[in-house]
Amino acid sequence: MKKRFVKLTALILASSMMLAGCGSSESTKTETVDLNSMSVEEITAKAKEEGEVNSVGMPDDWANWADTWNGITETYGLKHTDVDLSSAEELAMFEAEKNNATKDIGDVGETYGAVAEEKGLTLKYKTSYWDEIPDWAKDDDGDWVVAYYGTMALLTNKRLVPEAPTSFQDLLEGDYLVSIGDVAKSTRAQYAVLAAAYAMGGDEGNIQPGLDFFRKLAEQGRLDKGEFNFSRIEKGEIGVAIIWDFVGIGYREQIKANNPNADFEMCIPKEGSVQSGYTTIINAYTKRPYAAALTREYILSDEGQLNLAKGYAKTVRDIELPAELEEKMIPDEQYQNIKMVEDQEAWEKTVAEIPTLWNEEVIAYAK
Image 1 (cartoon, one colour):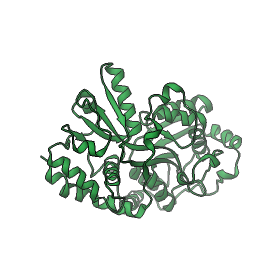
Image 2 (tube, one colour):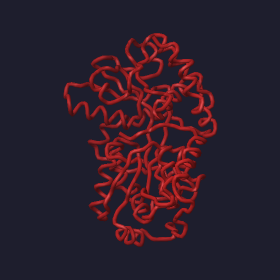
Image 3 (cartoon, helix red, strand yellow):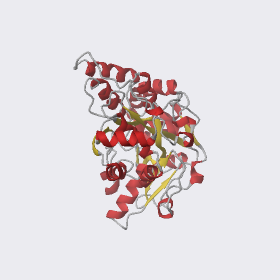
Image 4 (cartoon, helix red, strand yellow):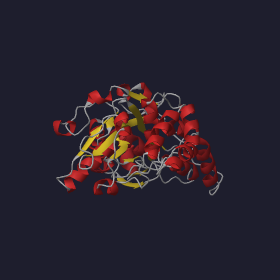
């Protein structure tokens, strides 16, 4: 399962510099490659000569990357390996290995794409699908491009909670355990607090309504303090989990495959929720720039986007889904009141403060 932990931009910079200090003083940045001036055919030919692509933070069991890597290998003959790291760790690796890069492309949380660009860690490539990608999901020149996104949702075990909650208000009025995970470390957990804050009138610069919401659950003894993982959800230790929609749907389908009598329901809270994307970044120091560019090209193709959709993620391009896949998704009408983080600076400040605030204002009240 893909690791997703938020760290401050300052910590990213510091850790990158420390790791970089372990190598030599000279770097091998791929500055002479202008991928945007090349045709897909030219990139493909050169990628086949390179023969492989090595990724970071793109494991088989996250958003169905497995089918994408299989497709790239079968279609272009490129060998592939992946190392699963968090977004901050990916950027630190790119910086640390700039003398001898081992990774070509990574998948990071939306906020980290801009950080990677600012640090000079990205190679530009727009792909041939540029005009079909919304403005919010790309930078001007292709330093980063969102491939898919998720929305905070509720996953309910109906064997434990027969009347599944459909709102944050419902959660407050229940009598079951609600799991969110480790807010001090998990990006998903922090976005869960932000989703609650949005629902209760707050925003990325005012997380207090979200903290107040979870403090009420803690005071009721209903905030799950155990590890947030698939195993505990499958075993029936958690009544409701607040989770990315595509991860939750994947859990539900896997549990149903293991136990046909299982009954899990997914929904987007009625008050609204928060959406965030994941973006590919091509390593500025890659030894295989064409294989990396071809990988991004494939990821944004119909085939690549369908692979991500099979992992139940929302695709950045509007593609038609098979009926059997569409039926498993949360209905589109539930996504009408979704917000995105607009003030990234305010959110970074909140992320810096939220571990302390969570412990002082929520965990301290937990029964």
